[in-house]
Amino acid sequence: MMNLEDHREILNQSGMEMFQLVRKQFIKSKEAFLTHDSDLAEEVLHTENRVNGMDLKLDRECERFIALHNPVAGDLRFVLALRKINFDLERIGDHAYGISSYIVEVDTPVDQAILDKLDFEEMYTAALSMLDDIRDAYQSGNAKKARKVFKKDKILNKINLNSFGVISEEVQKDPKLIDQYLLLFSVIKKIERVGDLITNIGEEIIFYLEAEVLKHRKKKGPSKPSK
Amino acid sequence: MSKDKKESVIESSIKRKYKLQANDVKVWYGDFMAIKGISMDIKPNKVTAFIGPSGCGKSTFLRLFNRMNDYVDGFKMEGEINIDGSNINDKDINVELLRKQVGMVFQKPNPFPKSIFENVAYGLKIQGLKDKAFLEERVESSLKQVALWNEVKDDLNKSALALSGGQQQRLCIARTLAVEPSIILMDEPTSALDPISTAKIEELIYKLKDKYTIVIVTHNMQQASRISDNTAFFYLGELIEYDKTNKIFTNPEKEQTENYITGRFG
Image (cartoon, rainbow over all chains, first blue to last red; front, side, top):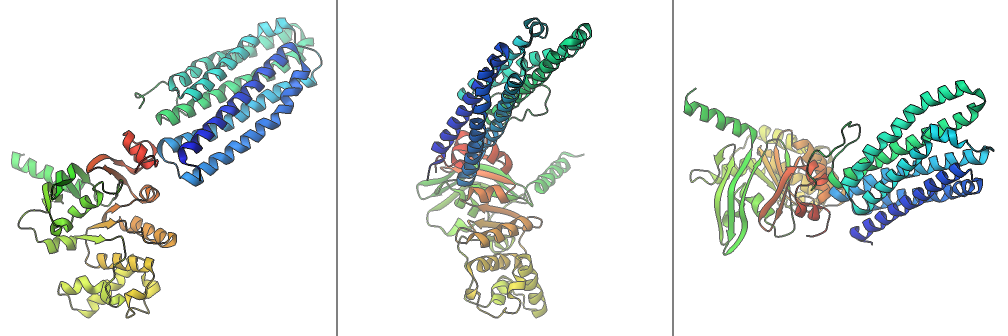
């Protein structure tokens, strides 16, 4: 039988693999969208099976870890957090899939001027930077790094909120562009959700590192010194 | 309020708050120091679990509460053990009465080679109680409390040794309850039992805390987390951490506690 320490390390590595896989999916979906590269988008669609497979594998491994080792304290928090992180990463993978499927379905690329008006690229870049921060926080067990994403998520929320006004104004000016704007509106919504999911992952990392529950708390700063 | 009255009010409030109190307790067996100055308060009607690796002093500490160590060769103690605010090591304490108040259940079931009825009535009889109706009533209520009555009510004259291990342990608990203690000490009460019997005893402990203060020594981490309200972790004769069980098993303060409960040492 595998000992608890080794089993936990294997789980940790599997979590890291899931992070890398989903990150790649998200980067590819960004590139595919901005360059309207349907081949790259197809690649994202095909790789979705791997994300789903990895999700199931990690879930099973977490269940096995709980059943075999009856974890408590830090080990229990780790495995509970990892299950939720895995769920959130899989959902981020779903959003990368959703964005890529738009590219495959839509023939004409979106005008660069429209992308600029909506700060679209900035939003995607901020989301990717959040994903990098949270991956690093997970890898290094660094709660401070995990907290960084809460601030960055506000950038995504702001761009998302502004997009309502911009889209409404632009569509009134030129109703022919409604398809492009609707498409962008959907993608912005997805990126905004990705930001929320990364924030959830940040909360989970802090939960397992510091035993602090940040869920549903508006202020997510540290309330006590780390152990 | 006068100073004396004030002190007596404070004292009685401490009595209500804590059933058992240990103040800077030190124990030696010859030259070996088994307990190195432990202080702790145990609340009434709670289950308190003592955990720690073998030889950490948890059983020694448990046995101080009914003075079971008194007859051990080379035993010496310093400090104070109080029950309801009274020092149980005072010279005028009647040890027999103390043990009536503080019952004990051991690792292996130890029924007497007598009938089921005689086992439960034993403590009452040595107290001089002979009234048949009273004894019958107390035997029945004790066996009911440990959920053994329905299993043995038609065989009360059968030898207790014919019962299964789990039934014998419940019988021993019934024997303890018959003399109406207020505290029950349990030293690994399920370590010799199968999982079903263990589950029955655990359920019983959970129910009994309504009427009794229970202190249990266990090596089974899951058992401690399932049944106890508070947990104390002992290591090398010291009390390392004592807190609510939920806290100990989800986010202990001390690294030593975390390492022990997660199986990294011990």
